[in-house]
Image 1 (cartoon, rainbow, N blue to C red):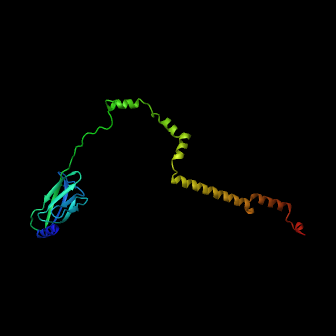
Image 2 (cartoon, one colour):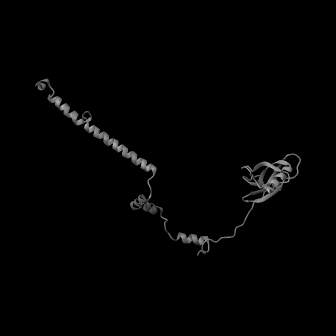
Image 3 (tube, rainbow, N blue to C red):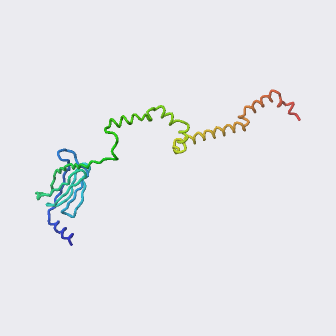
Length: 206
C-alpha cells in the first residue's frame, strides 16, 4: 500500500531528465563510477560512467545522493526548473582520513637507521657473490634441486626429441647392417668374387 501511495505521488510530480558530470573539487578530474541514489523515489540506483557522466529520469524535487570511495557524500535536490531537462556539474570533495600510528613488533635495539646498517654490514655474511655462486652451482646443490624442482615443459620436449633422434639413428643403422645393398662388406665380398671369376661361365657349368 505504501508503495502504491509513493507511485501515485510520484506520478503527480513532473518528470525531468537529470544529467551532469562529476568532478573532484577544485579540479577538472572526473570521478568515475560514482553511486547515485534517488532517495525520493524508492532508492533508485544509478552509476556514473568512467568519465563521471550520468543521465537518468527523475522528478522535480527529488533528493539525489552521490557517494564514492575516497570522497565525501554529496546531496542535491532537483529544483522546480522550467522545461523537462536539468543539467548540473557535481563537485565531490576528497575524503582524507588519518589513521592512528601503528608500531610493528617490539622495540629494536638500534637507536637509528645508521646503527642498524652498521650492525647489518658487520655480520659479513653473504657478501662474497662469487662464493655464493659456487655454493649454488655445486653438484650437491644441483642434485638437491633436481629432486625438488619439477621438470619444465621445454626440458621434457627437448629430451623427447633427443630420444626420437637416437631411435631413428639406431633404426637406420640396423637397416644398413641387414640390407646387403647398403652393407659395404657385402659389396667388397662381391667385388672379390668377380675378380676371382667365381661367376664365370666355365664354373657355372654343371
